[in-house]
Image (cartoon, rainbow, N blue to C red; front, side, top):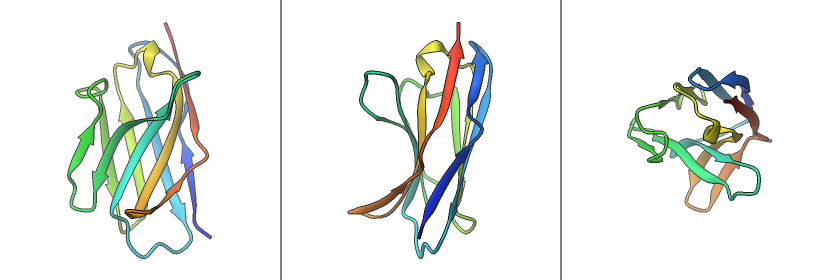
Length: 116
């Protein structure tokens, strides 16, 4: 059974930094894309950043220049370095690993709270 476990969430002041990490356990033969999504209270889950097996990255406009995603397919790990955090970044952050168009795995989420 595949499980994704996030770590690194917490409380930080505006302007500060946090690093989220996610590791997968269980058997995954191939990962197409790894990524981070977030869901703020009362809002829908939204994409934050993704990285393909080839290293191509994609970021939401709201985090470009502040967040950096990195991943290692062979180790089944993905990280998100978050700098210059804003109160609007407060959300539960979810790790995602997509193995096919129709199938992906999700972590349970890590809470990031940015105080102003």
